[in-house]
Length: 293
Image (tube, rainbow, N blue to C red; front, top):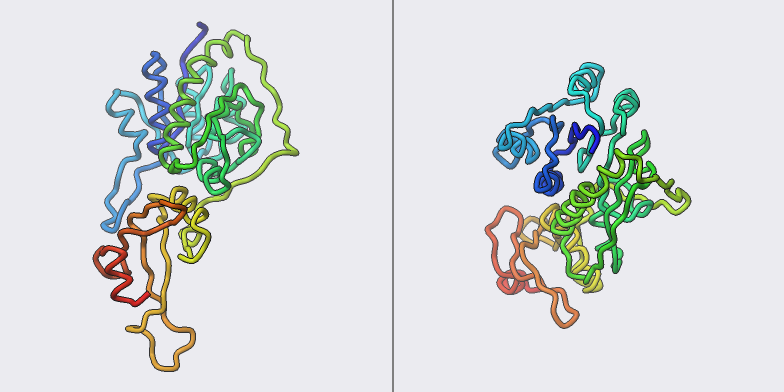
């Protein structure tokens, strides 16, 4: 195989699944580029991203730029990569960098492009009740998930997948695909194919408000949302809060209730454990009895 010196761009645990697949076949990057350490949780503890931990465990150089400026580009190019792999990096890479790497940037995208471009391709097929999804390897260009396709692999969905687990699986598949694709790409044995941009659909960054539900909604929709938004942002609902409502107040104050656990059986979606705002978790049965719902 030609020069296998490459750089990896990726940050979360999804990226590590791609890295692990590559590592199993002897593909180890000369540099890992990931996001800076970030404050996490209520105590705001400064925490290293999973890709950084992988790099440290494997004695690999790390770069954690806050932005891809000229100094960052220079720092990357000093490693003289033949190509780069991108998996869940989350930043737009400038043309000055894309054009400087001989065999380009191979991006792992967890959908069957051009369907589900954007930041939430693992959530959309669950919400939409799709029976299949997959992984696409594309060459990055300056637009989001727009570049030509090098390979695709399809998987069947059974209707019980959770988005986080689905994403892990897809990025692991993407790593295995790269092991097969990279040698052929470097040897000129793969031709890229332009996406049909007229068929492109977009996904959007998940917000906490997306996970707000009404318990009277269609149970199948609730089950899909539960699987799509678990563990974050996590489904929640609101009820009138008589303890906070003043006589005559309009609208009444609401009690925010997070759903911790739920089941779907006999075509019914049923929370089993909930956490009212400011309280400890209780069973949904106890909650209904206390609030007479």
